[in-house]
Length: 89
Image (cartoon, rainbow, N blue to C red; front, side):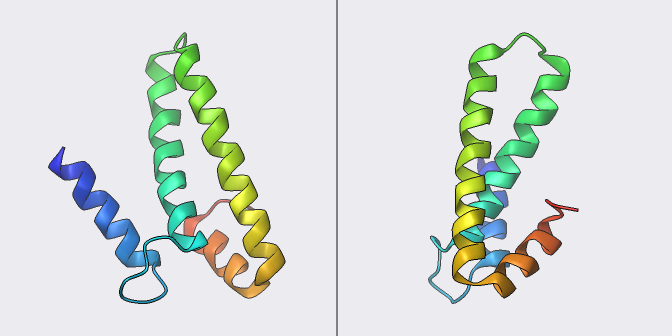
């Protein structure tokens, strides 16, 4: 469990906008992307886990709406974020 907390802390530190930032769209998208990546790997071995698949779809939807918000508010920050996370082409 400590590894998960350390990984989350590292993600927050990498994408925060100021020292006490934990809730900016960049941080939220980074955390969601990490969880989506984990679940995607999980489904490679557990193909019939449909309950978790529903959760994955909800996470993807939430990330998508956060990215749309960020694109609407500040396109420069949006482009930097998707480039650093490697989400879009």
